[in-house]
View 1: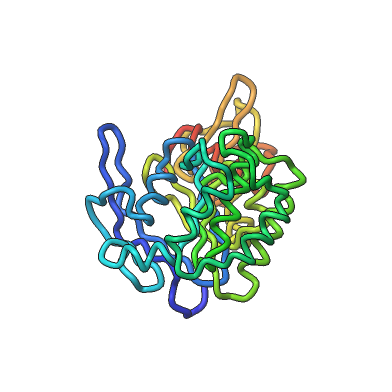
View 2: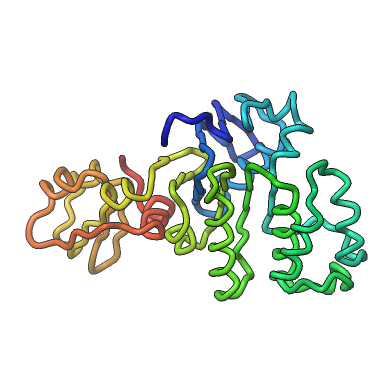
Length: 291
């Protein structure tokens, strides 16, 4: 990242629940970038996003949006944020246009012309009741609302789930257009890692409430590799160089950020290849943990 001030800063953010803890988390995102946020279900992604919106009371740390404190300056902060959750929180009995009339009053910078543009682009029926919309249509409506008040930080929690591939592709193009001026940023939680492969500049991976890494895509491609071989070749000493290892009766696959060290302990011919985001997430979430 460059030296510009971040639009989003999480500083030692901590939240404890019965059976789960979001461990002290430090993370920042500058203007003009898309950050993908990945991890298994229950890893802490939604808790993190709701913390930014001050929807959960933190046990420690603070969050800044464009330098404003998310608690002390809550109203100003929320005016700067557009958000889309994986489930909607609208009055189901209202028609789309009726719901919009309620929502727009909360945003001083609401742009009705821009909203109408997105309604047309997303082919949304304004006279239908919310409950009559499909899950994909509800997501499109949430996006139209989030994009229509000139938000500077867009928070997305699984925005492409339930959407068909054609609209998902269109949506990813919209995201890239939104950040093209360098004035907005997107914080994008998704389990569809192929979407993040296409648009994310940075990836943050969280596991069991702990931030494992935040890296740019090029660094991830260069640093993280899978080393694969027959189960008879596996040496437990190699585990010290692996972030996660998956084994079955026939073979093993280890995720490593230090290929040379891992290779020292594994005899014979093995396959070494760059790991994609899905493979990284699976090995860390479901593999045997060592390093």
